[in-house]
Length: 200
Figure 1 (cartoon, rainbow, N blue to C red):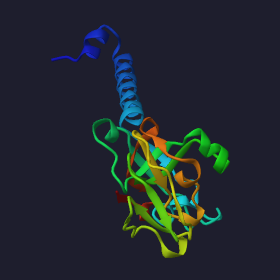
Figure 2: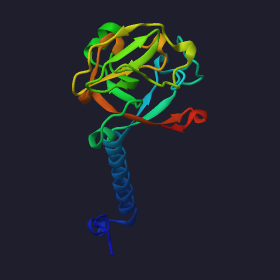
Figure 3: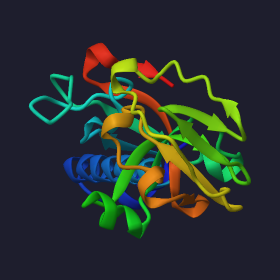
Figure 4: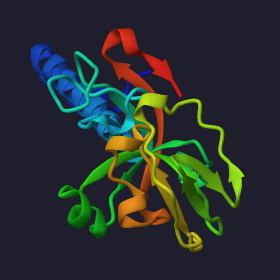
C-alpha cells in the first residue's frame, strides 16, 4: 500500500521522490515540535536567584549558586484540565505592576503559595496561610527574610506567588496577585545542566 506522497510523486524520477519524501518528513517533524512547544510544553531558563536553591541561576549573577542556569520545561496543558495547587512551581506572565516594582517584567518562575479566597501573612519570615503556618522545607534558612506583614484576601481567580529565596525575590509581596489567565503552567522537570536533571 502506497502512502499519499508516493502516489503523488510516482511519475517523478527516483532522486526527486526521495527528496520530496525527506522534505515532507522534515516538515511534519517541525510541525509536531512547534505544536508541542506552543500547546504542550515549553522550555525556560532561570535568569535570577529568586528560586535558589530549588532552581539555580549561573554565577557571577548576584546570589546565584550554579555554574549554569537551570533550564526547565513547563507543562502548558496542566491548568487547562486541572487547578493549580499550593507548592507548584509555576511559570507565568508577570502582571504589569511587577515591571514597575521589580524593574523587570515578562515571564517569571515562582512558587504558588496562596489560593483564591485565602489570606497570606508573614511573621518574622515564617509564612502563614489563613493563620496556619506553612511547612516550607524548600526555603533555605539563610535565604529566609524577616518580614512581618499580612496581605489582602486573594481575590477569586488570582494566586499569590513567592520565590524560594525570600531575601532576594520580587514577588506577590511587592506587586500583588497573578490572574489565572497569566499562568503558563507548572514546572514539569529540569533538563539542564545534566547533573540537575529532576522531575517536579
